[in-house]
Length: 261
Image 1: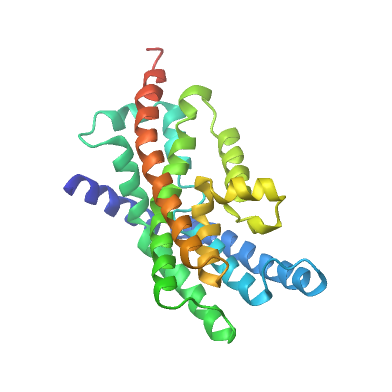
Image 2 (image 1 turned 45 degrees about the vertical axis):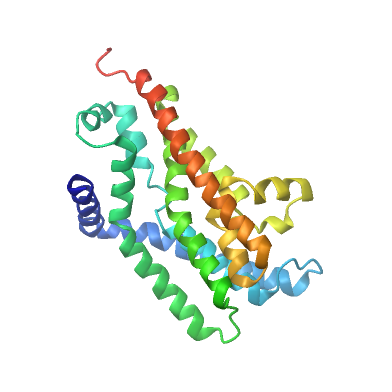
């Protein structure tokens, strides 16, 4: 555990050392959040199709913002860059599990990201008196879903990054991952606005646990047994993907080529 804790501390120091890059990446997500608030305010005022009310949509977009900040969108960039450059060979000789080490690194900067989410959420709560918040058991389910979304997002990013062992390219994989995750997680638009069959598939996919599941629980779009089933699905996907990624790693590492060997 000391080795993983050291990796986490190193990651935190890196985020604090390169503050400008870190702040700029957060600013991009914040700008998107503000833009989406403005767009949906107009759409829900003029549109007759209202799967969510404006009050619910604000809470939904706040969760989408939190998902974008927690374990940043480009957390997989360093891993993919090291695979492409062959520097991953140095990671292989360290006495730690590769997957667990990468998870420790993303957890290192998590506390900074949580502070940003708390600050934005606090400002939004103070400026919007009619914010919808869950109560009692619903609040507990929301908290569990948000906690599960952190390792779930990591393992999804990690799994996509493993594709670099075969493609030797990371930009295409990254753009494909962003497109797929944003659509099927509900970060781009709530899943209720998708065609019914696609919405059902997306709602029970692993990506829904990143945004849609915690957001719907927060705003009351999923309650009771339905909310519980969504959280259980999120947990099951986390377990399946975590151990599936371990199997994928065993196959992927055989593709590693360093200095022609």
